Amino acid sequence: MTWGDKLAARLARATSTLTRIIGAPDYEGYLRHQRRCHPDRIPLTRDEFVRQRLEDRYSRPGARCC
Image: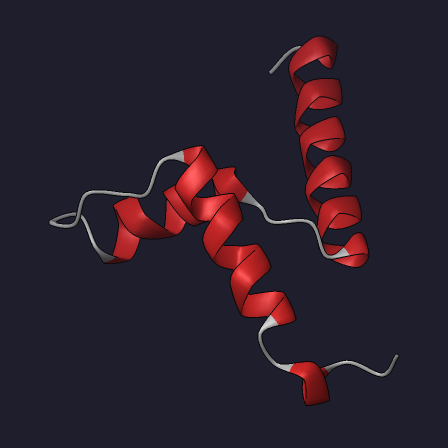
């Protein structure tokens, strides 16, 4: 693995961590999970995924502190 590959992997991990911290949907993580655990299912498109996650996040008013 070259230094460029290592840097790219670290940046990908950092990006994934930051998106989870701020609560942004992780589409790439969703796709990895779908391939690993549900290979027979057709994954949502990026737009469908984001829409579903936002609906899930804001449809439960008692689930957040503010």
